[in-house]
Image 1: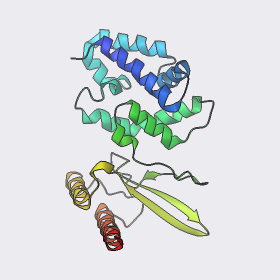
Image 2: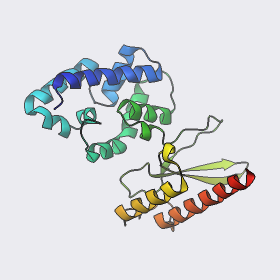
Image 3: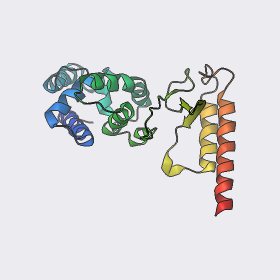
Image 4: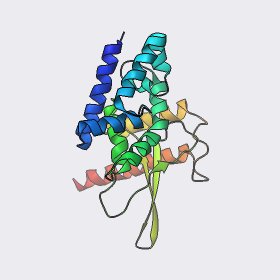
Length: 226
């Protein structure tokens, strides 16, 4: 069982990692981290409230706490905590952005928060291109709990409109067979939850068919060129 001492050390390490990843001074990063992620006015208050929560009801209160539960990532196999983070992470990033003195890309900030909280795969979901335009990624299926599974961004280029669609999948496991299995499992496990697509007339089945056809065509083109 994790102790209060370990939780405090983990909180310290999170703030330190946040500072390193964004190349910020430690004290400045501590303030941003405590406000954005743990809703505390300053870092010492985060320690004080963590102590109070732990003393009051021991470990269960940490798991049920609105913010401190994110200290339990990778300590407990609790999908509810991760699901909650998916819903709250944009608010965390927005709060941190509002406090920063320098501009930072929102997606980079979200990616950094995921990394610090021990979810490196989620940190790689989308990056901007670095070109002179900004891609605003949004959930494609607005009824699904995890907004990162399928996202879209609209782009106007030389007077024409394009829609970019991205599906979340671990890059190191990328293969057509693995993606087929992944899409099938998602469809079976969440049957009906994909309704409410932001683009009327589309469905997860159509997205699945389109994605597999695209990958197979791309794979066939690469094979022929080699």
